[in-house]
Length: 197
Image (cartoon, rainbow, N blue to C red; front, side, top):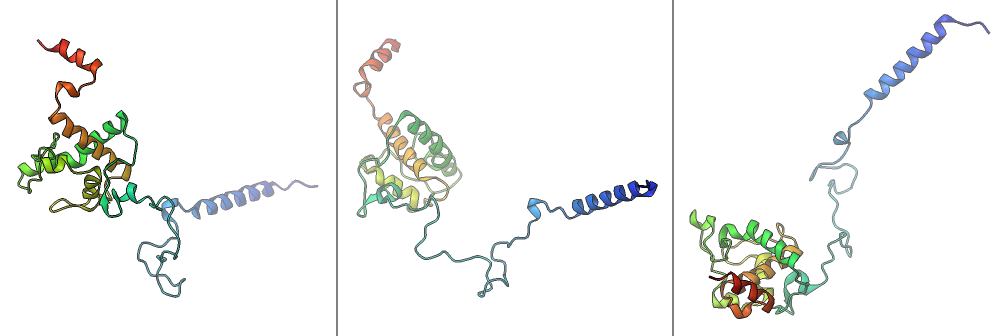
């Protein structure tokens, strides 16, 4: 078989042309054919790209069938007990979330004198008034979920577990402001008494 000097060059040129064409046709993920929200579509008969929710279906992770957990109420009344276990980690998470979402109005101690109030926003009630000290945990969860008075709802900003963690922290804050030495566990009480002059 005779060797043609142009044959190798021809194959190399063809391979380079195929490679260049493949690179030129590449689409990045951010440049995909897709519909933008509320964009018109000729594909569906109603002309909308966004599809309505199918009756009888629930999006994954959105069943929310536990009324007490997701509303803080049982039969329309605020629940008296926490539907979640309260641990040291829960209280720490509650403190962190309280400092982010609640302290700007309620301040870090819950007295109702946060930075927003100092800037002219309406003062919320202190979390330490008798009415709120006696309020059940479900009341605080409901207020965070649905808002109350001048307070907006935080259902979209604060997750359900974090709302319950904040309620637990509010209870700890309320206890801390009126605690006596008798409220301290015996082992810790001795430690505190040794620290006093």
